[in-house]
Image (cartoon, rainbow, N blue to C red; front, side, top):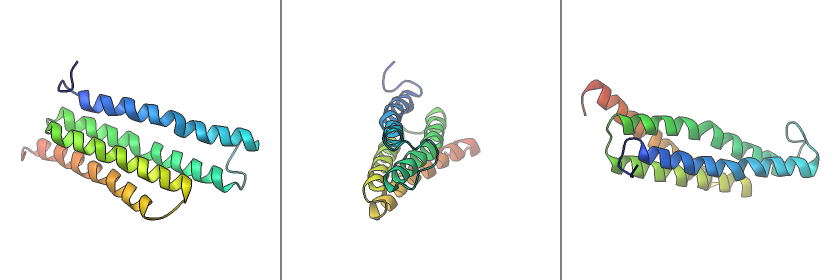
Length: 134
């Protein structure tokens, strides 16, 4: 398999995001263990930030990867798939780091923007292909 076979770009990003999910999940579990908090956040702001960062990652990445795969299957140009995947990766990274460090600020907005853009573009690619206009 090379980087231009069907779904190869999406598969690469699936693997990268799966690997990122491990430390993101581990930071929540390690904080829970340290505090002895087994459910919710126990009033700990650090745990709450880690939980929301983990939750947001988990809420957005799967749908983005699904629509990325759909765009790739539908024949969207590889350049769009690559740029969208990189945008998603940067967006999720910036958003995560902002949430776990300061909790708010422009990094969250930038991160969500870089996440929503590929969702929009990939969805558009699929819809254009399905309607025969692309």
